[in-house]
Image (cartoon, rainbow, N blue to C red; front, side, top):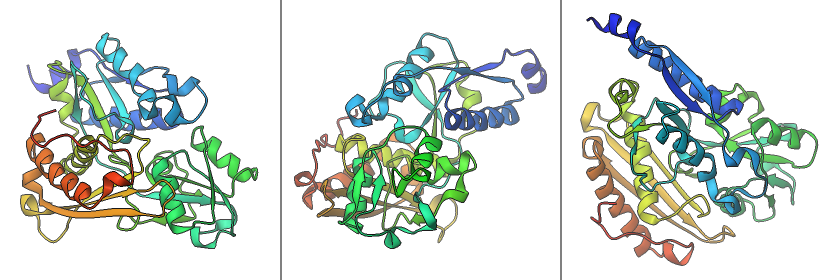
Length: 330
């Protein structure tokens, strides 16, 4: 059989997704990419997660992992063939029987401000109220503007933007990737470059998860973007070695350099650990050849160097971190 005839006879790929606008939009992009790459039909399977129905601060509900568990359980039960996560929501610990099968092209990784009256961060009035549920963003905001009142916020993108419009908050900080994917970039009033404001590990990237040994793994792998895979998975390797989750004030951003092409390109990573009040920060910059980050062992070795440098510089005194010993293989 030819590949075309195989795609005609193969059943549709079942893609598990959260039902929110952002999640279904992201999953729709993945579905389109899979259709184009494989010729197979893809159907979305909506799945409700605990993070979609529970209220309260995200960190107190178990962190971003509350959005992931139900998707993974459905995948393990065979209710779908693959699931799509926002990479930054995906806990770094391995789950037996599952693996990341693809990392599609990455969206913009920056954090952005959405404020009333088109204001940038430095233009906000003294004591302005900013909405953010991320300890990292809280620390970064207070580091730039100690006078701000940063308050927790929950809800989807449109809910958060509405709270700004209604005057409950003067501004909110969001991921540019999410606003880009759902067509809300007109609401952005300030963008924070990663050189000065590193983001969550994996921000802007999607993780397509499959069962280990799955028959669809080869098809799913066809939509991987090598640069997105290398940068986001190196960031996750650093976060994993720090044993830092969404409740830790840690920013990690890796960017592929443009000075050399192909496998000789360098990938530069910035990692910052903050005191929760933003008063102190430890920063490390580290560059590695793209080719040296092509597999998990290379990324882990490079991550170990970053974490050692962070801890030697005093990061452990600023946040609750517990780096694993180098080479433990986990």
